[in-house]
Image 1 (spheres, rainbow, N blue to C red):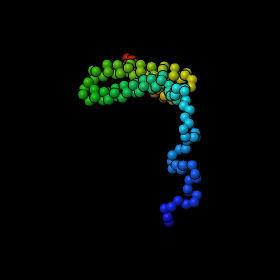
Image 2 (image 1 turned 90 degrees about the vertical axis):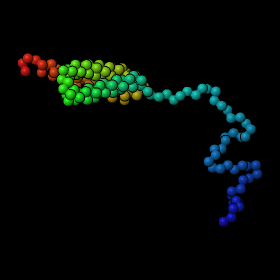
Image 3 (image 1 turned 60 degrees about the vertical axis):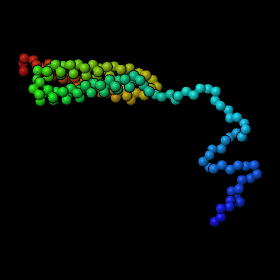
Image 4 (image 1 turned 90 degrees about the horizontal axis):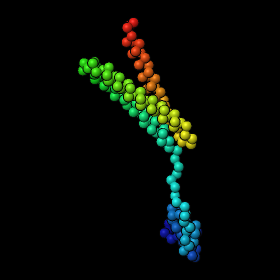
Length: 149
């Protein structure tokens, strides 16, 4: 093998060979390449801000429920029974309010056309689950506190 170029590899007169990884310019050298005069606009995304807010509200409601579950366990183990009713009431109201807000904002986000509705749907699912759970908890605790039991 020799290092000399093969007959088909030699450039012709006036022709410059570029490595294959360098793109060839479509315009002859010396002529300016036309530039775009329009400003570059970012690609439009299908971000649904209301859906994202609804999802955050749903996650907050879920977080409140998780914190309340941990706090209930701590209160039971430390003989904090007198605080249990207050903490349960406040926690239930906060998580219900956050869940209700997630449902309302989620449904308003679903009405937006052309935007992604996945986060709004997830937020509505989380919100409805927590809201129904809190309503049933309230109903069962109310029934259980009636004097007939």
